[in-house]
Image 1 (tube, rainbow, N blue to C red):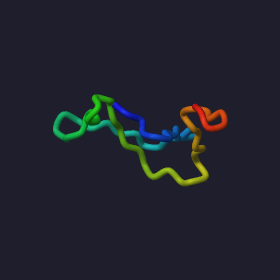
Image 2 (cartoon, rainbow, N blue to C red):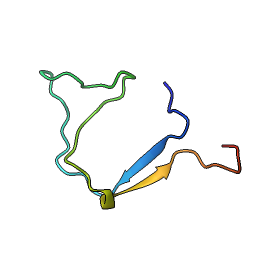
Image 3 (cartoon, one colour):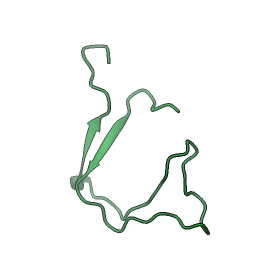
Length: 60
């Protein structure tokens, strides 16, 4: 599994109404085998975007 060239983490202050798919729905896991869930819409002032890797000059 690849995180791509510049992966980011969304640090969400508060999640509302987290739902996990039931056995009757498709999508309990991502194609990479990671468990998935959905939440209500998160407004742009309710999360902080953080780089997964810190860049030091032109190297990670």
